[in-house]
Image 1 (tube, rainbow, N blue to C red):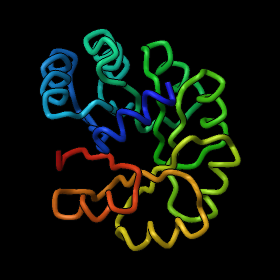
Image 2 (cartoon, rainbow, N blue to C red):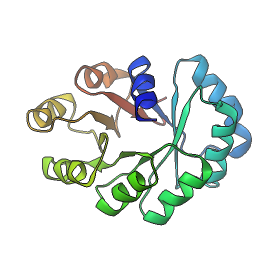
Image 3 (cartoon, rainbow, N blue to C red):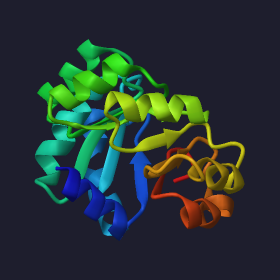
Image 4 (cartoon, rainbow, N blue to C red):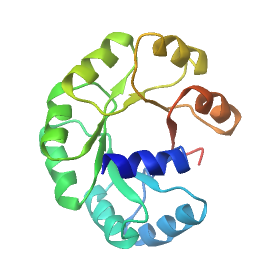
Length: 180
């Protein structure tokens, strides 16, 4: 799964954040994103019926796309994502318990961080990737962090068409929601 995620991220370094998607919209949105080359889909858990949407996307995508959850804050939510068929967990924060539960469930862990200290704590807990959130300080901040943090970083929060190329020059990828 980690290899599939990395491959899909290398092919198209964008994770589509599907905040607010509804179950009936899932197949059409998945197809449109696949047609655009986007193969990584995140359904934030603060979306109504999020786990239903995840399960629907997993069933519809059939391995052509990977589906995970965002805004995952607790161990219980990690288990719910796993039951829905999600393959990765993205959080807005660095919570070692969520990271450890994600790894125990065999999923990819992508916790949020903002400082080097949080990044190191996430990696120590077992994170696979780091999500810089919010990415409001820009690509220069990522470059500074990479002087000490030797892990793939995804930029999320404030990424849009105008700054995407700058982030992709220094990041493994970016999560894009409303700007998508």
